[in-house]
Every structure is written in structure tokens, then in C-alpha cells.
Image 1 (cartoon, rainbow, N blue to C red):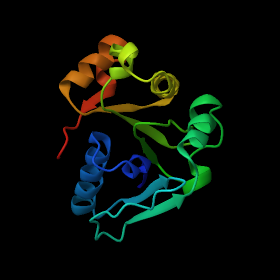
Image 2: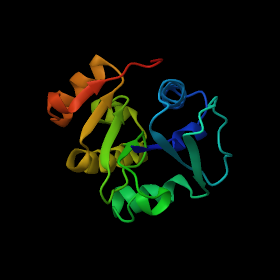
Image 3: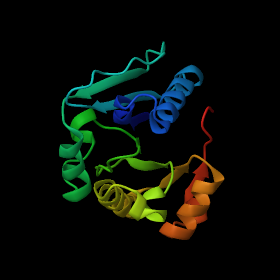
Image 4: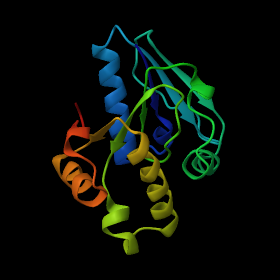
Length: 174
């Protein structure tokens, strides 16, 4: 199976999202010797992050697009499937910022928290708008949501009205 993962949020080192993604990808590289992984990375100015991966089945496809470009392309206009950038895949895992369309790939979306929904007045308006556009598409197209905690899962059920059977919890550090 070919699995794509958006690791673009690794550009923002030492954040909870970057830490979670780093640990997830590194853990998968240690235990999965069967599947092929294509890690999508895009940042205009930040270099490709260093990951502790010694698995030849993992490779990075890096682009120099600014986050605002991809946010508009995928969250706002919802054009150009992820396969246009990384080739054919069976599954694509999205992270925190963008929700690209896919041609045929099943999609999984990581849910970290719903702060922009729970406390919009305490969140920058741009972040609220981006998160709402991303979640709009995720709710329509995602086959499985990966929550980082039972609390995030509960919020997704109550606030986003996502069915409990579409959400699995994968704790940080696993």
C-alpha cells in the first residue's frame, strides 16, 4: 500500500502539531517495513526537516509553496488533488492546516484540538477561517479522523457532529 502524509507542519518546530507528526512518522518508520510512504512537505522558506528515519520505504517530496498558497488552493478552491504532487497513493493523511482533494485515495485527517471552534474570540481570525474551511472539506471527504485524545474525539462528536465510528484516538508519543 502507498500512504501519503502531509508533514508540512514540521516547519514549525517545537509545536505540539510538529511534535505529534514527528513521533508518528518516526514510529511508523520503525514498525512498518511493508508499506511505502510518501511524505509531502511544503514551505517557501523553511528547509525540509530532519527526521530520524532509516527506512528505505519512506521518501519526502518537497515543494517551495507558501502555506497561504496551498490553503487557498485546497481549502478555499479545493482544486488539484494531492496525487498531482506526490503521485498515486492509496491513503493520504492530512494534518493541521490544509485539506487537499484526492483522486482516489482514502483520506484520514488528524484532529489536534478544536480551539478555533471552542474559543474563536481568543484565536486569530485568520486561523479560525482556515480551520473552518479545512474542516468543511474534511467532513465531506475524510474516511477516518485521528484524534490525539479522548477530549478531542468528544469535541469532534459534539461540536463538528462527526460520527463516533469515524474517529479513532492515537495518543501522542505512540
